[in-house]
Image 1: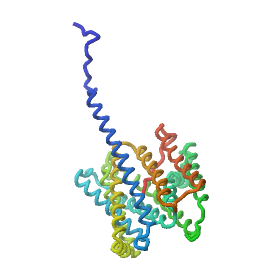
Image 2 (image 1 turned 120 degrees about the horizontal axis):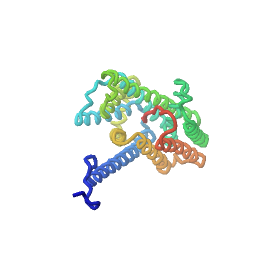
Image 3 (image 1 turned 180 degrees about the vertical axis):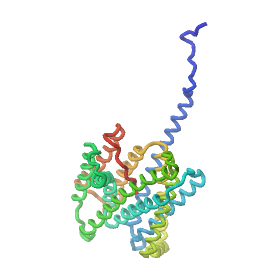
Image 4 (image 1 turned 90 degrees about the vertical axis):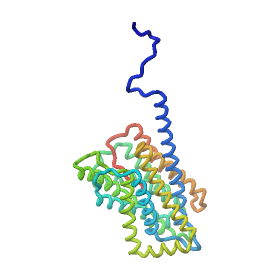
Length: 356
């Protein structure tokens, strides 16, 4: 007899049961919450400690050994990556160690420049400066790659808005007597510019790592290091170069002696390094489970929060109306880039610069 219209419909093999779909949705939601809370929490506290390490007095003295701090931070990152690599295993592919070494070196130097800048500029100035990575990426593409036709109108508008925001912010900054005046600020801004340039080189070197990995594995385009392999080799190479700089500049002894004199600083430095390692794990988790767009959205929101919190936490970081307008323009430009990407983009894909 033919089935009546009221007969229950049989599930097709490709249709998972409703309970399975609900469980998958809950699992994805839980992962999303873990990613957002992990990045926001670890890097928010990281930002507080970063400012304290360079701005706060410890037993009447300020810490100046930037490369020693980078050695500790990169070493901690590498140790955590090695721990998880031993648990989850590697990719089994050949790894282009020289390219990763160069990438890790420029990445470490970019962050060292950014951290050193904190000795001469306020934390909000440093955050806004480092938020402008899209500007050097586009400039390098136009001046070196001749890609001015590859960018759409919205790309130029976004860069113009961010550049205008940074300009308004810096021109609106009052000169504080006894703080070194304009020369210190200029030097600090120069360090931020150097950090941005190194970020641009890092992005190009990381693209080369992907191509070299495929090439040395029989042109297998699917061949790539695991997240923890990349984290280990990148940070290990940065730690090695930081150690060399420490020995050459004498910062290895200076940094060690500073830690011995101030237990409070030692605790802050270790917490800073631990937050960096934990935050990197959440970043790799987010990129693996979701998308770079979500990562950009979360990290940009975190930067806004850290900037505002720093202003209210430290009276010396107070901003006037003109500087708040500059902040608004910078973050509006960055958020608009994320929104446009979420709507399908507007032209050829741009190369992405990685965060220090």
